[in-house]
Image 1 (cartoon, rainbow over the protein chains, first blue to last red):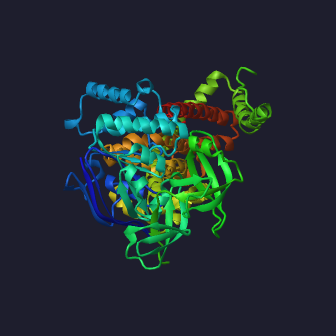
Image 2 (cartoon, each protein chain N blue to C red):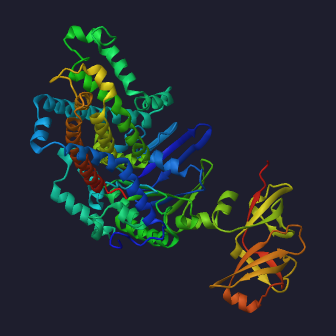
Length: 357
Length: 277
């Protein structure tokens, strides 16, 4: 089932949690809402679920207006960050809850409920915990039970609010690849909220980057990582180096290096910032022509296949360290050690004119 | 010793246990056993006769019956008050929250006099009830009213913190799974607060059994009708019948103890089902 939200706005007192947000979630996709805390991602999820009511705007399920529909009628599965398992019930009863509370005429018979619950427990690989109570389970297990419970009512849409937020790093990693596989098997339209960019990029079909109640960019993980639409997205997704630049009629000067910038053909003497990913910087021992910056190696981290270098520019007032990532092979070729002089050149970059403050 | 002592890095187990036992002995056990020892002045027959006269039996029925009824009413309405105080925001909430403790603080005699003034045939409330044929003051109903009054804070104060601890997420989760408000209450909220509710009930009940001050003013103290056991004990004391008084006291003690034990078992059962970690 597809989800569409149109022009949602929501205020909490003087704080605008959502500002005119519109978004379409395609049927069967796994979508991540990514953003820092306070960006409105959880509010958006709760409005879709019907747990919060927006001040303005619409929520549509499969093209039908669900804005005024009650939570109970939306057929939405919801997974909370802190699991929200019913602690007075066994795991089995937790999962069975959604079926047991159905009105008599649509409630499946007991035997069918039992069968269905065990099926779900098998799906989350925790069948053996059926008779335990929630407090006897680990965090990762509880979250899987919470997911099984949400799936028990056969929701058309699955919403997950920071589902792995309360878990430790290792369990997080396991669970997120597990969630991805589960989604591939079930193809239920799913939206999950996260502030962890790695999680969003690794798991989701598409990523929605949010900031201050607005959507900054929507795209596949590749798109948002490779072509960030704004400085915010650039800085939020992965490491990035900033270079002071100047734009003038399709040419740019990045820290003095002149390059083509055809997309800024109409710019007239504009101050700008160039965003360059650490792996998009070329490093050489000798200057290749004029278009290179002299820098000195201040730090080398050579663990793993990627070598991280920290450099300080020599002939620039900007003394912020530059992060560079090169392959181990390249590193061996160059044989760099701390204190060496190198010449660097941005291979790929994005220019954003300075915002007028 | 080592059989019930679990290894723990927390120091002072022996000292703490020793102190607890000593303190309980001094404050509770020794005075209570004095009552038992005093009754040994009576022979079994005398004892049995003293505690089973019709007048005494009537007083048991009233004391335990009214206390049970009052504690039950408090369990229901105390839960309601706690619910309102936790769930809603309204002007004067702090004031009402403070008012709940008033029956704790008020001298019981003052409560008794105030209630009597209200419910007497010419009192504020009594004058409207009398024509309807309902007499409150100087009847068993009056006893029940007084016991309800003094027992209310127990239920409110035990349920309130537990209710506050229930996360909104639990109710949201239940709603997302299709449960209506009633189902959410009966299946999620009530089982969670049940042990606390039983504790509050037990405290209110225990307090009501032992209540004396507020009751004697409103009860009228008519033998066989509105006379509570604590009053009979006092009456016997005033007649220098110490052994008879302690005999009644022992019976009350034993019944109270059994009732509280049963309530504790219920609570334990509820907690196990509630599986509160």
